[in-house]
Length: 58
Image (cartoon, rainbow, N blue to C red; front, side, top):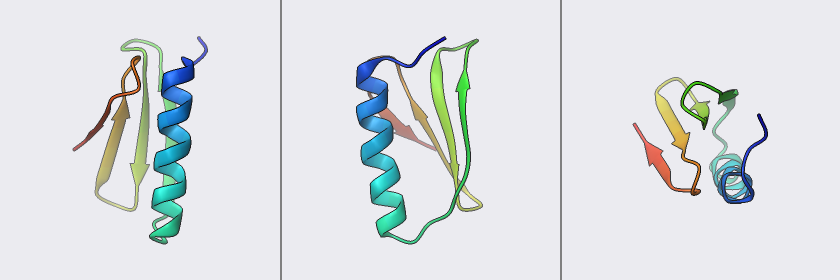
């Protein structure tokens, strides 16, 4: 499965923001079950990017 254009835009924006804050991006995965991009930033920040590009931080 390929990410949507909206997911890619959000992924790029979040990646640049986290690198500017000097946060390591430890994991990036396209979860095909729920069709979301999942990122693990640092040791505690979990980010999900929905199909429409909405970003949710847990």
